[in-house]
Every structure is written in C-alpha cells, then in structure tokens.
Length: 200
Picture 1 (tube, rainbow, N blue to C red):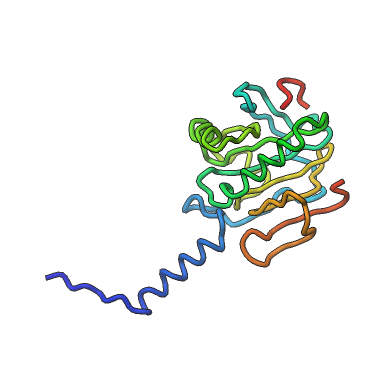
Picture 2 (cartoon, rainbow, N blue to C red):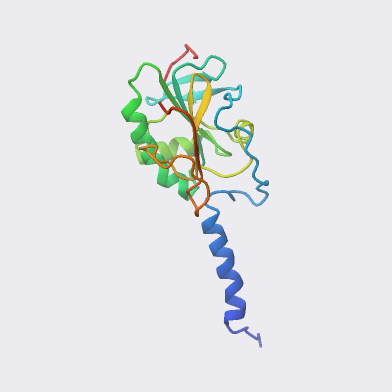
C-alpha cells in the first residue's frame, strides 16, 4: 500500500515560494542555466557592432547592421514563450506602426534562442509587423546582457539613449527607475529627444 503524504503548510509553502520567485523574475529564466545578470550595454554607450539577416513586414528578406546607424533605432530582444514579451509585443507593434514612416526611424526585434519557424508563426498569429531577426542562440543577445527579456534599446545615431527592461512604456515616462517589482527596471538618459539594403 502506498503511503501518501498529506498536504500541509510545511510541504506546500516551498512550492508557493518557488512560484512567487518565478513570477517576480519575469522572463529571466527561459532556460535552467540562466547566467547571473550582467549589463554589458548602458545608456550613453555605443550600440555593439553586429549584422543579422532580417524578415520585413511583407516577408521580404534583408540585412540589418549597426556599423552605420543614423537617426532613431529601436532594438528589441524577446522570446515568444516569455509572458512579459507576449504582453509587450503588441505595444511595441503599435509603436512601430506609429513611427515606421519617419525617414530616420528603424526598428528590429531579435529573438533569443528561438528559430524562424516559431517566430514567423507567432508574428502571423498575432498580426505583428515589426521586422524581426530569428536567432537560435544568444550570440547577439550576449553583446548587450546575460539575462532578462524583454529588452528594448532606444538609440540615436548609434548611441543608446534609453533602455526598457521587462516592461515597455509607449509614452517613455518613468525616467531613471530601477527596482520596485517585476517589470519596473528602466534606465533613461539625456534627451529622448544604415544599412542601405532593404531598409525597414
């Protein structure tokens, strides 16, 4: 006969603590071997140098490079299985639609450890139009940080002017915030005031 352990506060409490920790951590634990958080790019830094293949709003393919960035550039890191990313991607899409026709504006969403098939399916199912670059590893992501998504980097002429971490604000309010619970990490500075191939 199997002896069952009764559910008591003593064996339920550790499970409750674990669940609460996962909620507070947002999407910092997509994988079990998530590294300790290191911020490699901060407000005022130059955008790291990289080039990636991208898929545009109509499915057209092109490239994105940070070697000759001018104007306003927004770089988003995400994974579609991340709840915080699922919450923010529609807002980011709205932001993209508001600014996409501005001549000096570019925006790109870069997946972290997610393949093209998965990203394309999510984009189609949710009507997203932000140009994206599916990355199955962390090579590009690790140039910016080691943990936590979503991450949104606002840049002007190749210099980072604002970083939203875990929560995107379409109005850009709440300057210089840090802490205060999940989704409130945010850094901003100074005035919030290209590649020529397939310029999305």
